[in-house]
Image 1: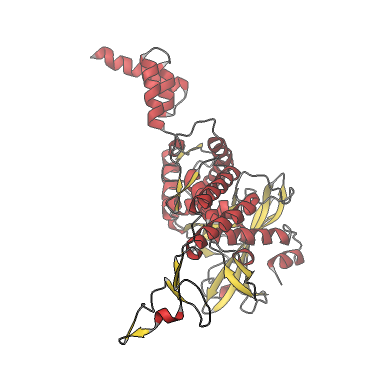
Image 2: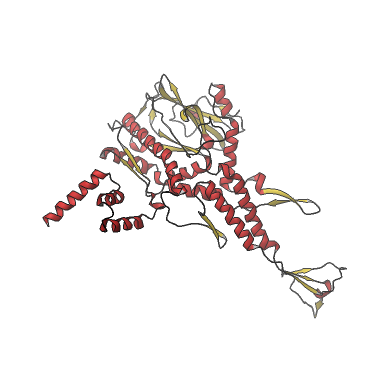
Length: 470
């Protein structure tokens, strides 16, 4: 029995099973080797032989680059209120959020969807009510779930309202499948924890979840007493053209599989060009005769190839030195990299094949470029996801730690797009325009300090007052 079959058995329909086959394919491309493509048969004129195609692993590279653009160390999350800011900073630091959020963006680009699921760990749960008691801030944890373990249960207008999250656990040599369900009951969310013994692939439900090591304090059922979801879904801002009614996202390279294949075909051929084009010297049998107890040619020298006896050739020693088509391969590979770059949202010429390796183009990116517009598009969903995560964490702080935090505090996310913009050059140009009287000073201040117009004017007024004093 599969998880999807179990969910259907208890009354929930999730997305079609075929979609998870798509995710599995994306996962294989992300890992760099796809069995049905990179392992293939070739006919040598006598029989079929198994071959392995080399992989340039561009799917992984594309995902890494999107992760670095979307979530890097320069991204800042500002919360209204000092207590709220300190609380969120502490929770995120405890959960290694700087590292894990970047990893999650990479997985999101590969799997199409990730989820952030905050929860309370190592706390006492009243089994009759599901209430959590005796918690502290270190007990607040965040699970990061990839798309292959996300099972939407209900959704509306692309927004997932109820969801189940899975995880594989190996405990004392036995394999378990952990399933956490977030469902609505009487307009309140209820979290149900289930555990299955999957050692033999049978998916047998364990009635007493507390009997398994590591799950001693896990409640079977937790009533949250809130209609706000206790999970956050984050996906690539790309239309799911596999199934328009499916709320899950698709991999950033989902519509570029054929291009990835073309890249690896050329890359494999490029390397074979050097293997097959290796210089060889065909040597007649008599040229290898031993003289004075010594062989004329070194038998371990791979440049020499001994012709079988009986083959007559006018040339006693014949050199075979085929010309390499390296330049043609490099041009073909670059063309395919340009195509992949454009299809994955980076615009053309983002990747360069130089000296046998892939480099990322370093250039000033204008606000009208394809990359900048696509980045802004993806940031829309990510910004909403971070805000939702902060609000859930604030709610947990109030619900279980009695901190009286403002759950409606304003949350501002600065993605710091200087990673693709030459910000310093832009500010220098603006400063010169201000000096020449071509630009209002407040516009420069707004750009440099990222404030609104009124704040910029106030900063100018304060500076003028200081100048007058001196």
